[in-house]
Image 1: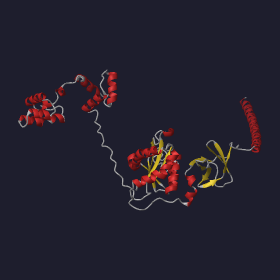
Image 2: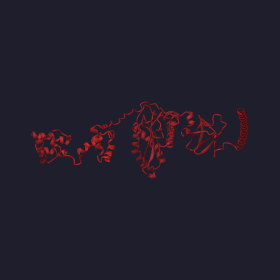
Image 3: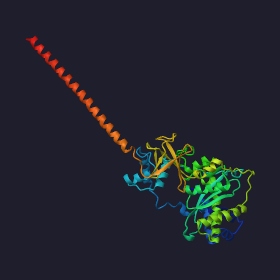
Image 4: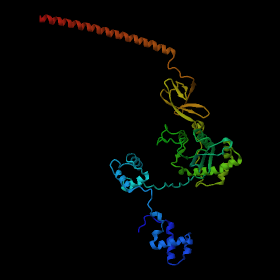
Length: 446
């Protein structure tokens, strides 16, 4: 007799004990203790085993037909419907809906799928192996790569009314040192710019930055957004200007070092802030810079493979333009009257500058303090803000235009009159010629 259902491990473990009892190696009472059952129950199992063999060690309900079993006639009918040309390309869910709608047969989607697999209308989709991530080796030099991330958490645990706050964190890939950290309200452009301004002033420029594909860093609507200046993000523009290599990770596991440090800080830093009674962002940032980061880096020291620091100094030009680099940059087109519109305000450019002309694209840069400037190809253009857009023409120019228009209109009317007079004369001449011809033809006929 073949096993229809595989025996469980519990049932299989009874076989050697029953065989030992049968061979009189152990007693029934000892065997019952080994199986954690009563001696009476063991004797019943032993009797069935001796008569019917191993198969009867299974629970007898295994062979019982389910009361909820679908009738074989209905299954055959469903198979016939499925093999019809009208239903051959149906999926299990849609097939289940149409069987109920058109044939009044209610069967679950899973059962339909099993029947379709049996008759070859559906292929079993094998689950792929889980994605494996290879551990990347640490960089060899300090400053070669900074892993950067923002962590939203209840850092102040509702003290002083503060809820979720973002901790911007940068760690060095080679040494795992926290190079800079700052509490901010969010991970938007203004907060990130403030973070990296402070970072560069403290540690100089890193060689590269490794971060995720958040909208502040990466334009996710275009595949080549890293290279085209028109569609890169403001943060990408800053990295290009400062010659910092921006690398975006394809998964959180890729930048797991900063993610791991975020998890550690969510445990340690929250408790440190609680013990010191810090309940606001300003005091939190002060504690981070003065106490926590230096102590944390001493507590978890890792040496880089090389002693080289790849942080770079700012050039003279970059130092001069530092605040303008970390500002909002927008492109505007010069109107015919040498004005541009920015945030519903008009700015008048000086027309006598030879390098600019209408329809030209210029950059308007605005610092977060409100200071503005307009540049073209890196050169600054003088401008002034005006309340209203200036009229295209002055009153004198408009009057001159009106006089010229009237004069042109009169000349046009004179020309039309002359043309019409010529046409009238021509028409009369042609009419006379026709009349003479007709009179001559009548005389010849008579």
